[in-house]
Length: 123
Image 1 (cartoon, one colour):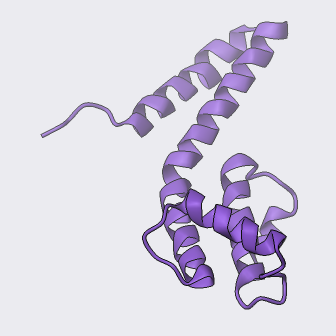
Image 2 (tube, one colour; image 1 turned 180 degrees about the vertical axis):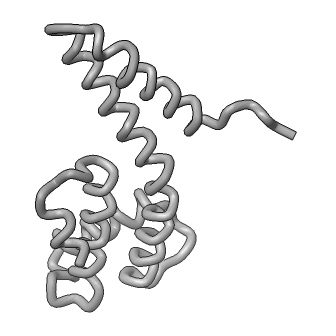
C-alpha cells in the first residue's frame, strides 16, 4: 500500500506554503515571482483534475467526427486540421462546432478559469 502523499497533495502543500508563508513576507520582484509560482501550481492542479476526462471526451468526439478509432488524440487533431484546411469539413459539418466549442472550454478551464467569457460559453 502506498501511503505517501499524492502528487496533488504535494503540489497543494507547496502552493499553500507559497501563498500563506512565503509570499506575505516578500516584496517587489520576489513577490511577483511568488505569485507566478503559485499560479503555475494552480494550473498544474487543474491539469491533474480536468485534463484526463477532457482528453478522453475530446478523443471520443474526434473519433465520431472522423469515423476512426485507435489513433492518438494528436493524430486525430492533425487529421481534423487537414480536413478543415482542404475544405472536407467546415462549420456546417455535423458535430464540428460543438466539438470545437467543448475543446476550447476544456482548455480554458485549465489555462484561464477566470476568463470572463468562460461561464457564458459553458452554458
